[in-house]
Length: 296
Image 1: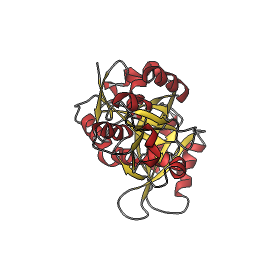
Image 2: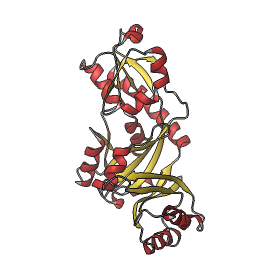
Image 3: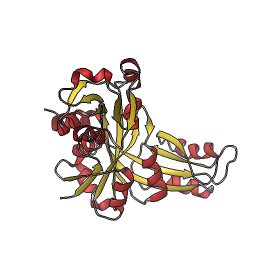
Image 4: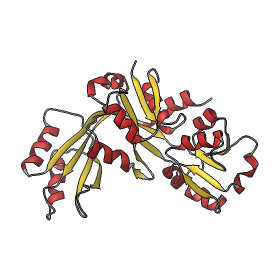
């Protein structure tokens, strides 16, 4: 049995993602993304499941920054989970939700429900927590007042009532979660039977800021007919205007194409770091598994 850590407490979307791939393993919550990565690096847990990107709010910057600047943890898998936000209240306070002074949740969840909050709760003050389920836990323990935005799983876990269902602004809202391990052989075998597609994530550092530099990077992928599903710039933290590029390539690890890209870019003076070659679990399959294991 593997020890699989996820961003807690119990009832988070990250727990839902972890259960999709590792429902037969030992699941343990951690308090922050940074803590989960540290525990994995120190081999106190075997695997960490952390959010990487939301379809509405974009990348989870703390995950990217810690992967790039703080830790050498390979990405060994990915799962995409549908995000459904619900407004929760204590039992017996369901009818007073519009008069709540505070609404508690993760900053991304608050942002994802902006239209609902603006229309129905314009005077309610937002209070941020580390996760949606941390807000639910605080409300259930009496250390927070008002209402929370969280998952159906959190409502069940902490004995709260769903006041309003599906209050998120966009229906096609999903989050990508990545699986991190201290070494690839510690968990990769657990993902093999789940494999649907494969991806490679790379970090490219420009040798200097000169005209055509990014074009040279893109050309190395283009003439090999490699599809880039994501390109994002992130600050190098060495000064204003200094950036590197995070790129997702729709291509598994191979002996020709990916090594060819790396060799070409390094020959031109670019820095290249591979964050992982990994299998991806598709949203439609993930939805069915999450529904069957977290509802009812």
